[in-house]
Amino acid sequence: MTQQKPQDAGKGGRRSGPGRQTSFPAIDVSEAWDRDKQTGEVQDHTEMLHSLTYRGSLESLSDRARFPVSEDKLQPGAKVVSKLSPALWRGVLVHLTPADEASLALSCKSFRDLLGPEAWRSLDQPENHEDKIRFLSSMDGSLPGHLLCFSCSRYHLRVQRGQEMLKPTNIRNPIFNCPDMSTPWKKAPRTRITFGRTLPFTFVQLALRAQHYSLDHGISIDSLSRYYKDRDSDWTHQTRYAIVKGHLLMRVVSTCFAAPALPPAGQRHLLYSPEDFVPYFSVCSHWRDGELMPAVKCALSHIPKPLEGSGPQRLAENIKSRIQRPAQLVTLCSECRPLRRCPECPTEYLIEVKLMEDRSDPAKLFKHALVVTRWSDLGDGSSPSCPEWASCNGEAEFDSFTALGRRAIYGVFESQFNPDHIPGQKIVSMNPKKEKRGEAGHNWY
Picture (tube, rainbow, N blue to C red):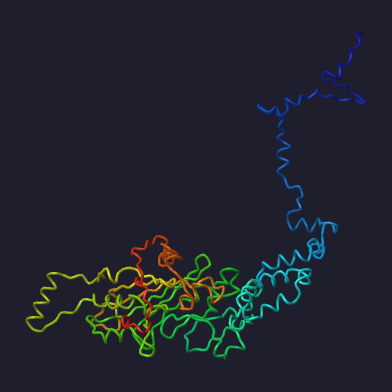
């Protein structure tokens, strides 16, 4: 019989039996992988997929915990500081504020030894009060149970943590126990809302801290809103707040039923408190200057008068009224209708006359009411000396038309609750002549 020769291994054959060897044909790389038509580079898709996987990077903190950096790569702070000469460090420290120096000394032991305790002692100087406030404010996030007191420049423990409630001015409502609380020249900063109601700056801090950090650091913004009736008049007030871009915005809507054709004495009795001759509704500290009060009195003059006369004359007036059917909705004139902005603080006013229901008088259920709405920007809560807060209290200069431009506080606030709301009033200056007479002027009275 003819003996069959085994197949050549180079042709892909194989032998069976013990110690068999398996051979595969040669693989051409250009056929197994794709080759770029322009560069001729071989593209291995498997290697590309593997490159997308996680390969133990040392970028995250968890990896640093599992794979700690060797000690030889860590340099002590003293070695870093010693890389620059003392003269060069002194040249750097000249450009730092006292608050920046104190923060640098607090960063590590090496910088503390370089700067010494004088970096902190200098903050107690009276001229560095603002720097001390800025230095202490940077610790707000790490002290949820404390609140910064701007009167004594210290952090105090919150005595009503999480339970702070805004109350009338005549009710004692301590947020913390400050040793300077009884000092006459160190009064807690606050702003007037309406007659008998103020907003302490501590509540501005609490509301903004809760927004920036957590609810444990302060209180919710909705807890500041109130609806109340004035104890000495017929005015009712409704307050609401919103936080927009780190600033606290306030809206106060004041309403009071007004009789038609009031004489000047009746208008003063309706508008002003007899104790301090300040309007019952919410106003900023510049309300006497300009045209705010004349515009309010102009709006009162638009309330329609009742039918006059008696007998046949009243009957004729009644028939004439039924034929003509005058509208009960009052349209204000061009003098009192526009939205007015105070040029010296971020505050805007809108005056309206609305037909509202008076349930206390069943004989005449619907009456005309005067409605004055105020919108104000109370600042970012960094300190009582911030431009918005200080200008609303008349303690700093502020150009509202330059700072706000065409952006109305009215539109920004209302858009937070009604995105489809479009402001329909033009904005005019409350004091176009920029007169500053204060109480010496007579136009407000």
